[in-house]
Length: 202
Image 1 (tube, rainbow, N blue to C red):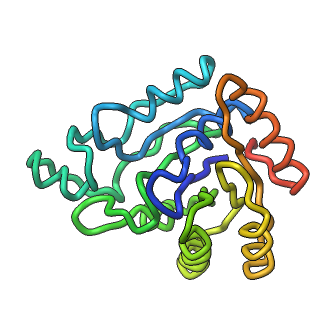
Image 2: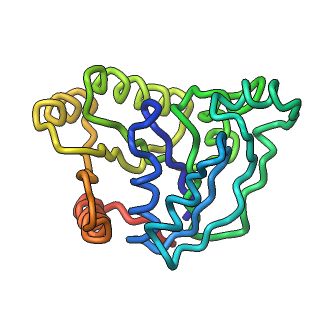
């Protein structure tokens, strides 16, 4: 299975969730667009020694929205034409939120739609998080993108969870905050997803 991991907002824990899913389900990793020299691929490699990491689709030195990096660095590309690696079990990590620019004309969500990729949405526990998560769910539905799972990272907030579940009718899986026990947390996430009848392998 090829799955598109996207965020309800910037810095909600997409890369940590991606690392956990790659480790637990033995998926290859592909970063669609990397903006900035501290790469998410490096973080994946540090957490998951045996995960195959493909070169990012586009690399921009500027740690900003990709469309800004393109202009500053005089780089031109059509984001929808970024080729996917030849891998049957692949996790594609987007950058920023669903409507973060992919290039000068498209957003991240447009790539998932164009390539018919099912999505995993990652949200966070913060003020405004409910709004961002529900808007993202609505956007995915309106674009006809299958939502495989909603994963919220951080220390669980039952009040937020209960409202999101009641309103969206979508169950939530969790990746709690980790320090040294990342691999344990990753396997706990896998177990939680499997209880929801969600598996990410062909």
